[in-house]
Length: 126
Image 1 (cartoon, rainbow, N blue to C red):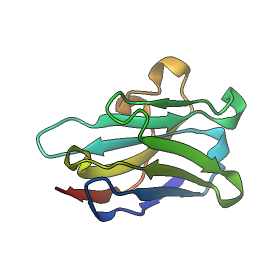
Image 2: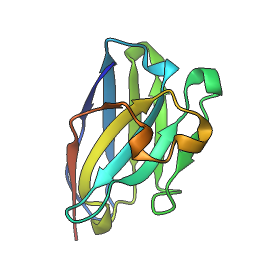
Image 3: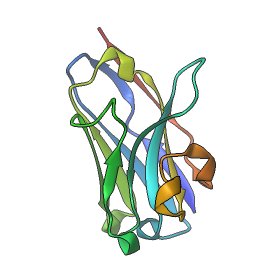
C-alpha cells in the first residue's frame, strides 16, 4: 500500500488543521494507521493510531496530544484523518502517516510500521 499525506500548513497558536492520509494499492481499513511527527534532533514521536477495522478500530493517542487531536477513518475514501485542534508551537513538526498490520503491543512504535507517507509540515506560530 502507498500512502500520501497532505493538509499541513502554517497556523496560529490555538488554531486547527486537518491532515489526510490517503492510500492506494491497498485497503486502508485492513491496516492500523498511525501518525508520527518528527522535529530536528528528535526521534519520531507517536501521535495517534487507529486500529484496523478488523481489530475494532479503537484509537490511541500520545500524551502530548490527548484531548486535542482526533484520528478517524473514511473507508469510502480509503483515507485516515488527523484533526488537530488547540494547536501549540510545540506541535510544529513534520507529520508522517504510517500503516501496519501489527499486534496491539506494536502500534505506538515506528519501527513496526512497514508503509510510510512522505510527510507534511505543520508549523504553529506563537
